[in-house]
Length: 81
Ligand SMILES: [Ca+2]
Ligand SMILES: [Ca+2]
Image (cartoon, rainbow, N blue to C red):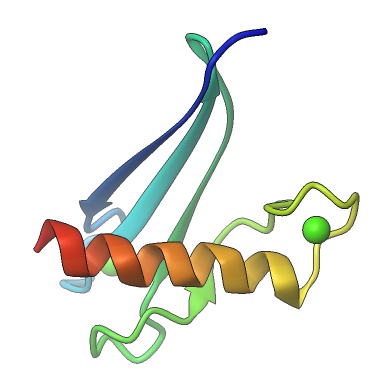
């Protein structure tokens, strides 16, 4: 089985002066999925998942998935700033 990897970066993807946290999910060298989390009020509080994904792998896209991405974004911002 190919190694699963999440690449996390902070970039202002839409150039609105508020950085997004970008997640890229890889299986081996293949990009499976990418999404980003942004701050809807541009105040550094990360609360908006830009592309919905099934983060917990239970087959649906719901608030729990958003929560996982948001939690990871908050941790990433704390670690990468
Ligand atoms: Ca932005
Ligand atoms: Ca899910």
